[in-house]
Every structure is written in structure tokens, then in C-alpha cells.
Amino acid sequence: MRFPGEIVWLILWTVCVAKERCLKSDITIENGFFSEYEFAYPLNKETQYQCKPGYVTPDGKTSGSITCLQSGWSPQPTCIKSCDVPVLENARIKSHGTWFKLNDKLDYECHDGFESRDGRTGSIVCDNDGWSPKPICYEQTKRCSPPPQLLNGEVKETDKEIYEHNDLAEYVCNTRFLMKGFNKIQCVDGQWTDLPMCIEVESTCGDIPELHYGSVVESSVPPYHHGDSVEFNCTEEFTMIGHKSITCISGMWTPLPQCIATDKLEKCKYSLTRKETNPLSKIVFDHNEKISYKCRRTMKQKHSTCINGRWDPELNCTEVQTQSCPPPPQIPNAQNMATTVNYQDGEKVSVVCQDNYILQDAEEIVCKDGRWQSIPRCVEKLACPQPPRIEHGTIKSSEFSEEIEETLKPKLYPHGSKLNYTCEDGFRISEKDEITCQMGKWSSLPRCVGLPCAPPEYVVLRSIPPRKSDTYQYGEEIVYECVEGFWINGSASIKCLGGKWSHPPKCIKTDCFGLPDFGNAIPIGPMKESYKSEEKVTYKCPKYYEMDGPNFVQCIKSQWIGKPTCKGTSIKF
Image (cartoon, rainbow, N blue to C red):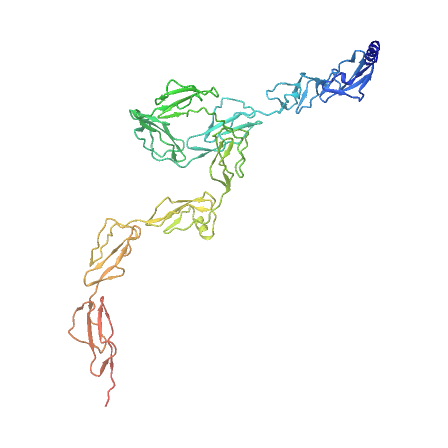
């Protein structure tokens, strides 16, 4: 057992020994570590510590030194966040420093030929993740002069003299013309992207459709061309529902509005729940009454109008996030769609094929839910062979030489070619006389229809008059019948052959006059001046002669038929 004095001495000795060395565990180096492996260091011993990557000592070095003193380690090791000199793309820094500590700010400027978004000098800051924000220097772009003129169209809002890179200009076509291609062009580094085209629409609209209980404000004589509009009014005590005008679009009128009796207009019911929005003072509203409401979820003020029992727009507190579409895709064999413009949901773009190609399927692509819908194809146009012949008709030819060439060798007709037929005399075209080559096939052929005939002007003598009519259709016949004692010479009928009658028959007397002489043959009976058709006359032979063959002749339609012949007989003694 030790004495108390020995214990006190031992404690003092331990403390003295401890003061003569420093331990690693006595200190923590934040964002750094000791470079050497010793666990304990004697008094006055200096050692090195290392900072983690991205950190430096207060004097900007990656390592520092501390010394073991009577009071412990000194100085306190420190590793602070640092940023190296940044390597910038298309830019240079405006400082000669080699390292930067946390929150230091560094100015930069873009290289020649490049510029920042706002055209000014930018700055970046050293933070825990390095330099931010990332400097972006765009290649300098050229501006554009005012957008070019569009044939049969015009540009909207041409008040600007200078257009910046990526600026847009929007076009509309004149009445009677339809836009093909993008309705917007873009300034790209001093150049405008390709213009759209305004194509004349040949198809027209006919008579203005009738609006029940309404009338046209001001009308003109048809036809109406693409883009023409007509405005309507409703009669007294009727209210118009829908657009007050209709427009001719590619040969079709847009839908008519409606004229509803004012006392028959339906009311609208407010259908949103308390969970969706605050309640209104009433729930039933008259036609044309307007309301405002605020959705709880978005606190967004909305407006709607009651239109004959329906809200316009529909009451809705469900936020539908519509997505824009990227620039339209490049369709093979279509004209170049060079644009960086994004399109909003519902917007449409007309597609135009390259020469000798034609659109298959829809002519427009539609932006829907962030994607382009109904993308068509451009297929190669197919030529047509020689056009078919039609009965009683030929193809019109502008020049005689072309007509000769047409008969000598086959010819191919490009897609879209149009040819016209003409009919022979006495015939007319039953439908449109034009045919069109459509992808290797001709459109439906016309027919040459015979013209009707008026009643025949001539009279067939000694005939029974036929039944009369005011007019006779092509191919219709009239049959003639001769009076007794006469017969038809030729066809008994005449035919209507396209405004003309075929050659008429003749009625010839059927009696026979004078008996024919047959030499030795002698007629039996009294002689007459004339004989009726089918009447027979018998002959006989004189003595010493005998009949060879039939012994009579017959009157057949004014001609004698038969030849009685008398031959001599041999005499026997």
C-alpha cells in the first residue's frame, strides 16, 4: 500500500510528462488531415497537415504546419473552401488571382465574337459546389432587317425596323388564298427562315345557306371565294347563338349560327362544389349573364358567360397543364422546316412537299399534349398513261401537231395534268368535260350523250302516219307502215341519231304491170293491166312442147318471180 505523498508525486509526474508531448487526438482538423503517421509528438515538434481537395489553408496553400507547444498545438489548423481559377468556355476572367475563397466574386467577359444573354459583363461566385452560376457566352449573331414581302399575303405588325436573333414575324394570306407552310418565320443570325406560300384556292362556295329566323346583313352574287365571309342578323324576338358570320373555307361554308327564340333561351346552373371554390350568391343564371369565381387550389380568378344553357368557357377548377411542342419534325421529301420556334397546344402547321411529291393523309400537323399529331408523308407523284377513249368523243388538242403525235406514240402525263374531251356532232358532254391525272390514275371519264331529235320534218308518201311526240331521245325509233298496195323499201324505221334522223324509207307500189314474155310459154286466162302482189299467172306450152320447171310466175312487191320454160319434145313415128 502506497502512502498519500507518493500518490501526489505520481500525479504531478504524469502531468509533467503529458506537457512534454502532444497527441493527434487532441485536435480535429475540419476539412483536413495529418500528413504523418505518428500518434504523439514531442514538445516543440512541428508536423504537417493536408487539406481535402477544394480546400486550402488561410494563405492559399493545400498544406500547413502546426507545432506542439506547452499549451498544445499551435496555431489552430484551418482548411477553408477554395475555388481554383475557372476555365471558362468562350469567356475570360478579369482577375490575376490564382485561388479564391468561399463567397469570392469573380468578374468575366466574353471573348470577341461572343456575348452574354443581356450583352453585359457577368460575374460568378465561389460557393461550396464551385463557381456559379455557369457563365454562358453565346456566339454573336446578326440582326435582321424587316421581314420580306409575301406574295398574296402580308406580315402582321411591321412597326419594327430591326429584328433580333430568334425574333419572329407572323404572316396571313389574302382572301382567296390558303397558307402552306409555317405562318411564322424566324430571324436566325441575320437571315429569315423560309417564307410560307399563299396558294390560291380554286374551289368556291355556292349559295349562302339559309338561317332559320335570320337573314344576311349584306350579300353579293355567288360564287364566294376562300376567305369570303357573310354576316347574319336574327329577326326580332330571336337571339343569335354562335358566331354571327360564316366563312368560305376551301369550298365549304363554316357552320351557321342559330337564332333561338328569346323566351326559349335556357338558363345555366353553377355546378362547382364548395371544395373547389367559394359559393356564389345564386346557382341559376340567365343567358348572357357573366360570373367570376376563384378556385381554391390555385386562387386564380376565372370568368365565364352563360350561353343558352352552357357556360363559355366551361366552369373548371382542374388545372390542365398544356405542353408546348418542339419545332416540327423534318418530314422526308417535304420542304425544309428550319425553325427553332416552339408551338402551343392546338396550333397547326401546314406541310408542303418538294417538287414531284404530294401529301398523303392530312395537310396539317397539330400540336397536342407536347407532341405533333397526324404527321403525313410526302410520296412521289405518279404519271398517268394515255387517257382512255370515250364513245363518240375525242380529246381536245390545242395544236394539230400534238394531235398527230398523240396518235403515233404513247405519252405519260404528269400528276395533276388536266385534259378535256369534246363530243362528235349530235352529242354533248354529260358531266364536266375535264379529267385530271391523280397519282397514276385518271379521274372519272365524262360521257358523250346523244342530243334529242325534233319530230321528223319529211313525210313518207303512201305511209300510215306514226304516233307523234314533241321530242325524241337519242336512239328512239319511229316505225313506218305503208298503205295497202305499197311496201317498204329499206328499213321500216328511222332512228334519232343525235339531233338527226336516219335515212327514211320509201313506200313503193306492190302491183306488177305487164306479164313477162317467156318465148313459147303462153299465159292462161285474160290479160290485165296490173296484178296484185302475190297474184299468180299460169303458163302453158304449145303443141310439141312441154313445161320444164314451174308453170307459173308470181307478183312479189312489183316484181315477177319465176321463169316458165317450154322445151321441144322429140317426135316418134
